[in-house]
Amino acid sequence: MWPLLSSCPVALALLIERFMGYPKVIQDAVGHPVQWMGWLISKLEINLNVDVIAARKGGSLALTLLLIVNLSVSIILAAALSRFTWGWALEAVLATAFFAQRSMRDHVAAVASGLARSLEDGRAAVSHIVGRDPQNLDEAGISRAALESMAENTSDGIVAPAFWYALLGLPGLVAYKAINTADSMIGHRNERYIHFGWAAAKLDDLVNFIPARLTGLLFAASAALANPTSGRAALTAMSRDARNHQSPNAGWPEAAMAGALGLRFGGPRDYDGETVDLAWMGDGRESLARDDITEGLRLYDRSLTLLFIVFLSLCLIF
Image (cartoon, rainbow, N blue to C red; front, top):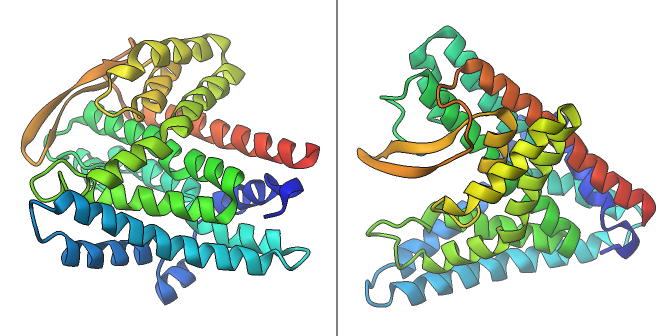
């Protein structure tokens, strides 16, 4: 990579993807890199998840092969682009495929728009971004689900890719996305994947450890820009409640957002007909509404702007 420009590709990628997203014409023509990763993971799972006794070894092998393929391609591509003066800018354009600023905002805004029409439209919209059962969710449940998803995915889909891209270049970005995609597909604690997806889930926890905490701090800082009291509330909720989440990482951005907005996240929800009672985060209102999604989107927008400014500043300084 370009050592003196290590933050410049990140800043440019964030800027382009935030306003343009992943072009639909490219999506329709060749698909999306994450879809290609998903295809490979599916093929590996079919061929290697065949023996319950050796499932953990099979899953580890599948993850290793996934990383070898993706790292090989990204290293070759990064090396080829580094030969050109403005290759870093072209690399940044390609890297936009691995960020989710635009799509995340669009999906969450669609939940607010759906609730404005009807409860059923709100449920339909939120079902696209959460795994919990939507059919029994009221307006508060739908709003909470949308905000929790946005908080967690700000880390997984934006801050973590930016962190690993800045730290290890294009190969770091691609490797992170491969690990995160594997976790989302096979890192589940059900009968089929509890052993096979063990390596993917553990490695995903590891690579998200720092980014999740940085995302919580990003929300707190962004909240403080508008209201210092909200910023302090975000830090308080994060330091007090984040560790109570069943995930070692998701609680940090979720607790920070809950504190910043004066809300409570967590609590009981249904997955595949089974009720799971999660720890509460934040000490604000439990009765959320559509307007809270709008406020959450404002915090999200400020956070994206602040993140871009951080990387742009590093680019200009170094």
